[in-house]
Image 1: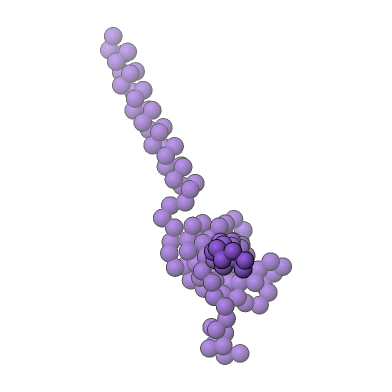
Image 2: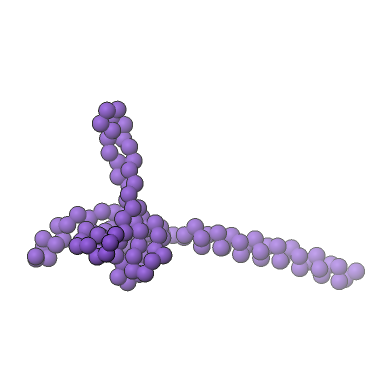
Length: 119
């Protein structure tokens, strides 16, 4: 099979949902289809297990994946490219907020302790 034929495989874009496993990411792909009877657009979500050889994709990244031969029981896709990096993950944002709150509390307590020592 030539590289031209190989590059014609189905490619999809999605968001990295999980990267806890080694060399495997879970990508959430959203598609819209029209309901056959009512005509309303319905959102469908599907998770794909994707092979990430270099462990470079992080949670929240927008990635392009491509269908490939079966790599394991669940993996049928491989990572092609990372289109958009995630700005900040939820866990990182929570950790930063906790640090800010703790430093604010410590700064409030320090002047109170100094005022008591002066008396």
